[in-house]
Image 1 (cartoon, rainbow, N blue to C red):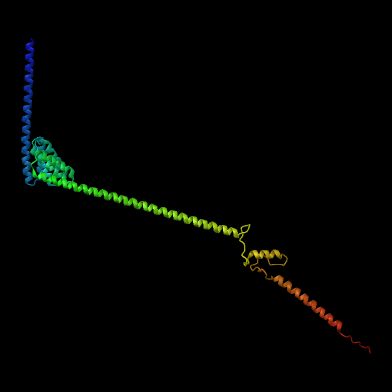
Image 2: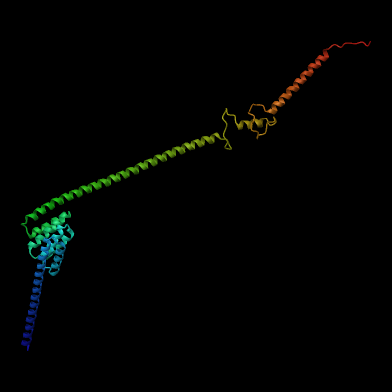
Length: 300
């Protein structure tokens, strides 16, 4: 019984292995068939591309790529078609796809070599160096790849120097701008300080003028008259000294100046002189009357 079970188990294992091998064989046959169809499509696309029919060629290459992921020629050739049309982004994608699909080193070498060319066109020299190095790992004897690697290294060194110079120039420009900004700030600060000093000087001068004006003013804030100036203050003092001289009213347009007689004063003076003259005349007449001889007349 035990031997029967063991025999059945062995038969099942053999049957399962046989079935798996058969499935793998069928899958292999399908993959080979798909690769053949993909290769045929690739040949058709190559002919159309040679005839400058890019649209149909592109369509055939895409069909070939969709048929088999083992066909490295279809994406590589399509990448070349894009590269020649200067569509470098699409070309790089197809070269990368070709490198992943390639099973032998020769195909990998061509894919990485062309990826390096795309990087050179885009001036991505550091990436180009790495792509060419990978290409040489798969084919160390390719002189074209070796030459391109040397050129990429030289261009990378030049690019790094230019970037360094640009950075130094940017730093210099930034420093110059900062220095100019600081200089402008210093000038503004100096002008502000000079303006403040001038304001202080003007303010001090104004205070001195105010103090001088206050010194020239009286208790009630009136200006003191100069020694030789004769103004309203002298007139007021003159009027206070002679309140009874009959000066004209203050609202009269022409006010009598100090030491000048008013019209009333002149009139009073004339009247006094006339009275004095009259008295003198009366005295003279009296003297004449007293000295005259009286003639006695007889009454005949």
